Image 1 (cartoon, rainbow, N blue to C red):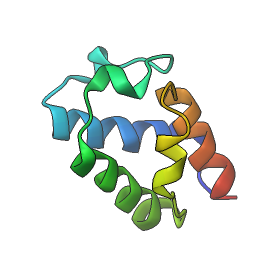
Image 2 (tube, rainbow, N blue to C red; image 1 turned 180 degrees about the horizontal axis):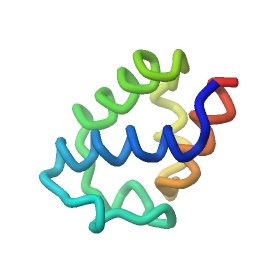
Image 3 (cartoon, rainbow, N blue to C red; image 1 turned 90 degrees about the vertical axis):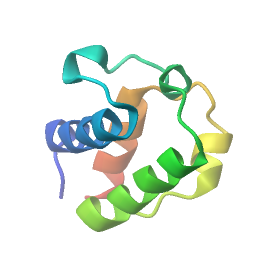
Amino acid sequence: MAQYDEVYDKVCEMLCDAKDLEMTDLNPDMPLYQLRLDSLDYVELMVLAKKEFGVTIEADVFINNVNMTLKELCEHLSEKSQ
C-alpha cells in the first residue's frame, strides 16, 4: 500500500530524470501535457507504476484523460496500490 506522498515523490523523480527538471519545476496541479511527455515517457510511467506500486496502468488512462494532473495520476496510483 503506497501513500500519496511516496507515490508523488517517485513519480516526480522519474519525471525529473526523464525531462531534466528540478523538483521545484513540478507541482501537483500541473497537467501532464505541460511536461511535453512523449510515448516513451508514458511507457516509463506505466513501468514505474507496475514495478514500484504493483499497479497496472493501461494507456487508455492517459488517452482518455488528456488533462490529467500530476496529482490525479498520483492519487490514481495510490488508490490502486491499496
